[in-house]
Length: 108
Image 1 (tube, rainbow, N blue to C red):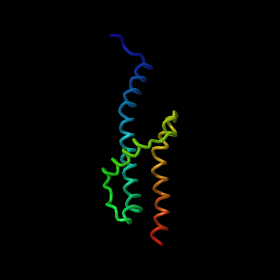
Image 2 (image 1 turned 135 degrees about the vertical axis):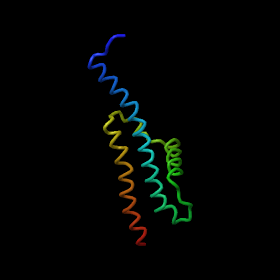
Image 3 (image 1 turned 90 degrees about the vertical axis):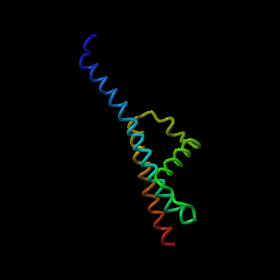
Image 4 (image 1 turned 45 degrees about the vertical axis):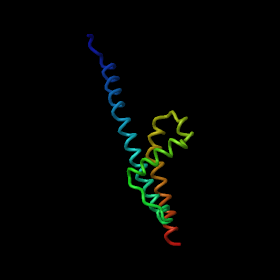
């Protein structure tokens, strides 16, 4: 078997890293989305008399909603940096704006 040169070894290492890192990032984003959904649910839906969502149930509800409704904008995204930023900024912005709205709802 022939030895791999430096560029080939780098390519193999990068491939292994991506193969391991991408599922971990996706799982992390899924957990963050579930956490944000459970918090927003507790702020806005529980006061209406609905049962609170646990983290795992919120993750399942989010997965189901994503499957049913999807997001056409994300489906056309090709830039990996934009996708990665979206995994962080979308739930963070939802939580920040949800918190602001929650403060007004609580004051009413």
